[in-house]
Length: 111
Image (tube, rainbow, N blue to C red; front, side):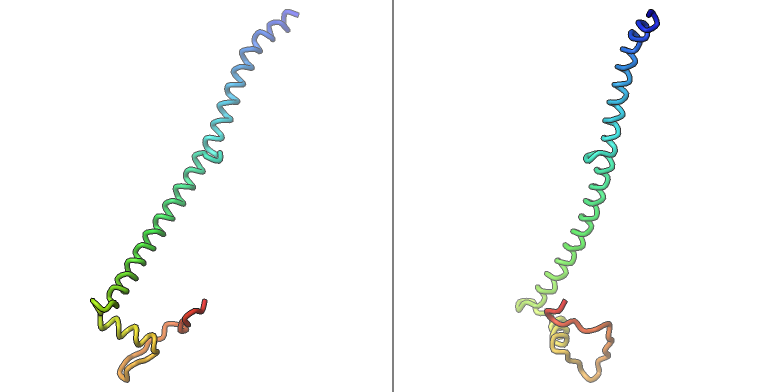
Protein backbone atom coordinates (compact mmCIF):
# COMPACT_ATOMS: atom_id res chain seq x y z
CA UNK A 1 0.00 0.00 0.00
CA UNK A 2 2.78 2.40 0.82
CA UNK A 3 4.21 2.02 -2.68
CA UNK A 4 0.89 2.87 -4.31
CA UNK A 5 0.50 5.95 -2.10
CA UNK A 6 4.02 7.12 -2.96
CA UNK A 7 3.32 6.52 -6.65
CA UNK A 8 0.16 8.69 -6.50
CA UNK A 9 2.05 11.53 -4.79
CA UNK A 10 4.76 11.62 -7.45
CA UNK A 11 2.28 11.07 -10.30
CA UNK A 12 0.72 14.48 -9.61
CA UNK A 13 3.98 16.23 -10.45
CA UNK A 14 4.70 14.04 -13.45
CA UNK A 15 1.22 14.45 -14.95
CA UNK A 16 1.42 18.25 -14.62
CA UNK A 17 4.82 18.33 -16.28
CA UNK A 18 3.71 16.01 -19.07
CA UNK A 19 0.62 18.16 -19.64
CA UNK A 20 2.76 21.28 -19.92
CA UNK A 21 5.16 19.59 -22.33
CA UNK A 22 2.24 18.34 -24.44
CA UNK A 23 0.72 21.84 -24.55
CA UNK A 24 4.07 23.36 -25.58
CA UNK A 25 4.52 20.73 -28.30
CA UNK A 26 0.98 21.32 -29.60
CA UNK A 27 1.32 25.10 -29.79
CA UNK A 28 4.89 24.88 -31.11
CA UNK A 29 3.84 22.57 -33.93
CA UNK A 30 0.97 24.85 -34.94
CA UNK A 31 3.16 27.93 -34.73
CA UNK A 32 5.30 26.42 -37.48
CA UNK A 33 2.90 24.28 -39.54
CA UNK A 34 -0.51 25.74 -38.76
CA UNK A 35 -2.86 27.65 -41.02
CA UNK A 36 -1.30 30.91 -39.82
CA UNK A 37 2.09 29.48 -38.90
CA UNK A 38 5.59 30.35 -40.03
CA UNK A 39 5.53 28.19 -43.17
CA UNK A 40 2.20 29.70 -44.27
CA UNK A 41 3.66 33.16 -43.67
CA UNK A 42 6.68 32.33 -45.85
CA UNK A 43 4.42 31.10 -48.66
CA UNK A 44 2.33 34.28 -48.49
CA UNK A 45 5.52 36.39 -48.62
CA UNK A 46 6.59 34.54 -51.79
CA UNK A 47 3.17 35.16 -53.34
CA UNK A 48 3.39 38.86 -52.46
CA UNK A 49 6.86 39.10 -54.02
CA UNK A 50 5.72 37.36 -57.21
CA UNK A 51 2.65 39.60 -57.44
CA UNK A 52 4.78 42.71 -56.88
CA UNK A 53 7.13 41.69 -59.70
CA UNK A 54 4.15 41.05 -61.97
CA UNK A 55 2.63 44.42 -61.05
CA UNK A 56 5.93 46.11 -61.91
CA UNK A 57 5.93 44.49 -65.35
CA UNK A 58 2.31 45.53 -65.91
CA UNK A 59 3.07 49.12 -64.90
CA UNK A 60 6.04 49.22 -67.29
CA UNK A 61 3.94 47.78 -70.10
CA UNK A 62 1.21 50.34 -69.44
CA UNK A 63 3.75 53.18 -69.55
CA UNK A 64 5.04 51.87 -72.87
CA UNK A 65 1.53 51.79 -74.33
CA UNK A 66 0.69 55.23 -72.93
CA UNK A 67 3.85 56.61 -74.55
CA UNK A 68 2.95 55.04 -77.90
CA UNK A 69 -0.61 56.41 -77.72
CA UNK A 70 0.71 59.84 -76.74
CA UNK A 71 3.01 59.83 -79.78
CA UNK A 72 0.06 59.02 -82.06
CA UNK A 73 -2.03 61.96 -80.86
CA UNK A 74 -2.42 64.97 -83.14
CA UNK A 75 -0.46 67.35 -80.85
CA UNK A 76 2.70 65.25 -80.93
CA UNK A 77 2.44 63.02 -83.98
CA UNK A 78 5.53 60.86 -84.57
CA UNK A 79 5.83 60.29 -88.35
CA UNK A 80 7.87 57.10 -87.98
CA UNK A 81 5.35 55.53 -85.63
CA UNK A 82 2.48 56.61 -87.86
CA UNK A 83 4.22 55.08 -90.90
CA UNK A 84 4.88 51.85 -88.97
CA UNK A 85 1.25 51.53 -87.89
CA UNK A 86 -0.09 52.37 -91.38
CA UNK A 87 2.11 49.70 -92.99
CA UNK A 88 1.20 47.13 -90.37
CA UNK A 89 -2.53 47.78 -90.52
CA UNK A 90 -2.62 48.05 -94.33
CA UNK A 91 -0.22 45.15 -94.89
CA UNK A 92 1.87 47.41 -97.16
CA UNK A 93 5.57 47.71 -98.00
CA UNK A 94 7.73 49.86 -100.26
CA UNK A 95 9.68 48.23 -103.14
CA UNK A 96 13.04 48.64 -101.33
CA UNK A 97 11.87 47.33 -97.94
CA UNK A 98 13.32 44.13 -96.50
CA UNK A 99 10.63 42.05 -94.80
CA UNK A 100 11.50 39.56 -92.08
CA UNK A 101 8.69 37.20 -91.17
CA UNK A 102 8.64 36.27 -87.49
CA UNK A 103 5.53 34.11 -87.36
CA UNK A 104 1.96 33.86 -88.57
CA UNK A 105 0.17 37.20 -88.79
CA UNK A 106 -2.17 38.09 -85.96
CA UNK A 107 -5.76 38.60 -86.99
CA UNK A 108 -7.71 41.25 -85.11
CA UNK A 109 -10.30 39.68 -82.83
CA UNK A 110 -8.79 36.17 -83.00
CA UNK A 111 -7.50 34.36 -79.95
